[in-house]
Image (cartoon, rainbow, N blue to C red; front, side, top):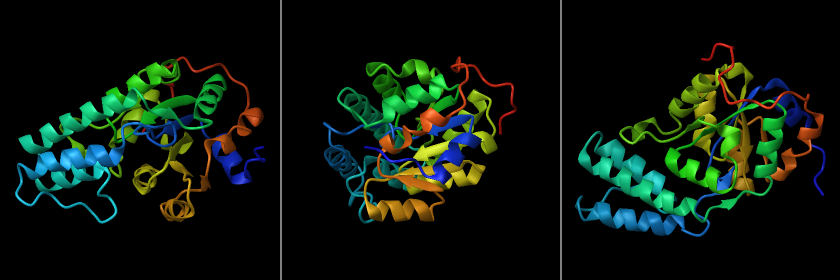
Length: 251
């Protein structure tokens, strides 16, 4: 059984008209059957054959392919190495999208928010085509329409915590930062939201990450997306969003 949502979570949704979802985590487990550490190891081997000694990533991030891409982009910006690495990572993400597993409660939350009239967008550091492939596979594409914003092929430096994808989502949905809510599972999500003044709700399945997300500015941190489903009953009913930008001026 799911208990009543906190007053803080209720207030976040009551104040929002647009919800920005991170993809890998809040919506699905992208690498559920195509493990991220295996992908990262393969990409790292490829980099090491081209860069003697390889490119170090921060301790604890060795199994994160996005961390490797960021590290290579920091050291070799705008070069063919980072462009080819990004392309190879995109291929792996597209493959992973075929077997990604829905996060429990996410599908129902997305459908319920859409029916209540919320504008919805994806704001991810993954390739947008991978997110689109997954959404189409599980029947969620109609709820996001063209509002899927992810990694820019020639601009890995624009990944979160840079707010580039959030800013793009606000523009395409016609939303302001003050009426928007970001749901994410990383410190980078929280930092990107903070840079634009967007409220941040964290998703974390362990206590250590919960603490990190609180420090990153999360007003609320939930351990399961199911915890948010009771909020749907208290939302003001509205017409389902048609996917078109609001008349509200965006940031």
